[in-house]
Image 1 (cartoon, rainbow, N blue to C red):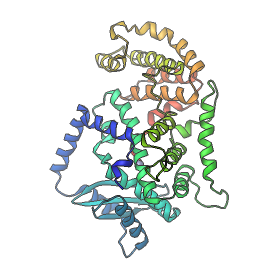
Image 2: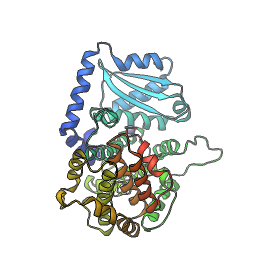
Image 3: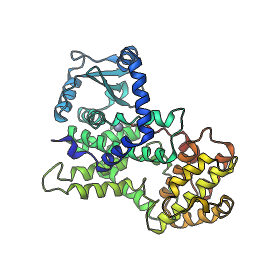
Length: 401
Ligand SMILES: [Zn+2]
């Protein structure tokens, strides 16, 4: 199997565009200069100091699984496995150093996950390496001292979701068992590992996605979904996307083609990433109008629209809006009307999406001023979003899982 063949098309497309982005290039160069200055290998030294290395004799089973994953993914870089004491399920793969690749697990994950589930987790982490996702230093860019242009911040966020979809596919390809893969994602999402109180059902887990979609089709409907949206952003959606993947001809002959697969996946992800800046539906129009009025009002509320903010807004206004026609006072005045329209046409998830995007914009210029925070909260309240949603968005991390 050629791992390139199963990579999510949207991941690849956005990844290539991001590698060409000037700000991303500049950040990559800066990181490389830093690494060249430092003589000793940083990651390995850190892992040796903070975690326990799992040798082959200590953990033959785990190493056999790792062998199986590297074989299936066609990798020949030697692997070192590490565990650290931690109650949260977590695993990570690091950029190779001196020809060695590292995977780190939390102790709770290793103890609570069955073999097939661990194969998925390992395959997922190795997928990030296979597709060189770490070449986009998303954390550095979003947390760095120099602020990224908000358009880039939005792109990075969207890309990271599709990068997870690609990694899930390599994970599923290593585990070869959708049931276990889904159970692994269920454990990650719910924290429940035993079967004393809960017996996991794939069909019912997937039904949750259908219910989310159903809620979503009823504008004005309220559902307690903010946690699915942010904290466990999209585990059920990932399972749904994986189900489509297992039904494709990438996994068995006679399945759906890749184009059809990616269309379906985009539809599933569309719950979170509607392309509303260009969409033609009533909902997209209402979202776009609200986003523009909101972004300008938030930029203006504290010390007016700066030259820098104007530039940023320009990048969003290209499609049919002229920056010189911007009248922030007029837009501030019509903001309530745009909120009302969004409430009428856009679903709850779509409204959450707009506010989250406004938060990404606001966060690009830190610290977020109190007046900006108040306005964001006012917009969120107007849209009937749960209390605390803005705060959650502002604090949400944007790292690869
Ligand atoms: Zn991941």
